[in-house]
Image (cartoon, rainbow, N blue to C red; front, side, top):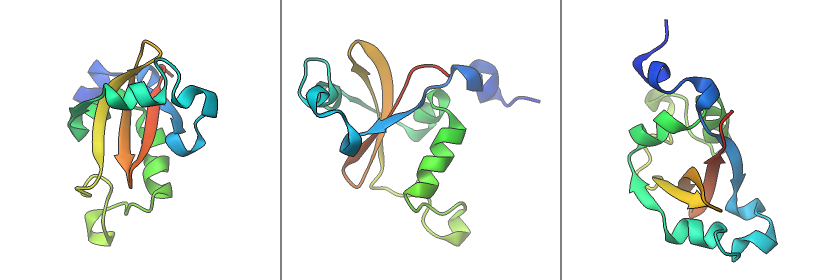
Length: 112
């Protein structure tokens, strides 16, 4: 049975992991509507709001790659890390959601 969140935001419509700023195409970093504009115009959101819009499978993989523990009893989780922040913005007029970890932006876009 789907959870309440899945009922309102089915997995297939959640945004997929797109890219991190460290792998961003150089020509799009300072382009109009590109990475710098996305960051400059971002609005801070809660993790809960972020979770409603991004693909959880993609997020789980990303969080493991970042070294986050799978459970608080096993160490620091990304969800429990107060240095991680979540945002909503636009990238070339497309709604995107991203999180920052260690001053690196991890961007989710499009619908899967």
